[in-house]
Image (tube, rainbow, N blue to C red; front, side, top):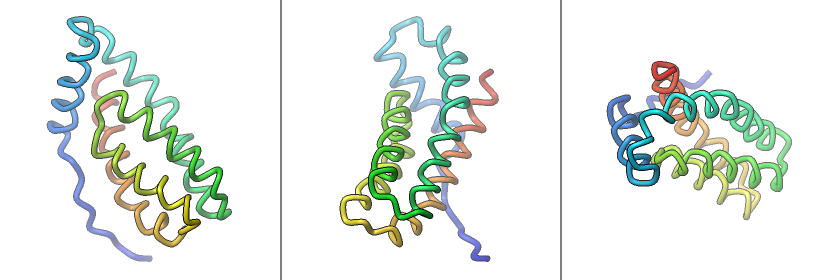
Length: 124
């Protein structure tokens, strides 16, 4: 089993970036909505991540594109730009059916995703 030393965004950076983004897009109500948004992400995010993994394992270009795109959209709508960028790289690999590249990027994507989930769990 390979061990990856993957740098992830700090919890504080995730939270501050998300608050800045949501404050700009939602105004003063972002503080009230933040726990609800976090809960929805926690409910939907793991399934999308699982779909990405399954698509890679099954070498399903359409599934990979759709699931990576969906997680990217959920992430970027909450100001989670680093996670969205990881999703974009994986999504892009679907256009060339480069499952090896997609697979090699998954440790970074998963590490960032897990860090985001950790931040969200503290908010609810």
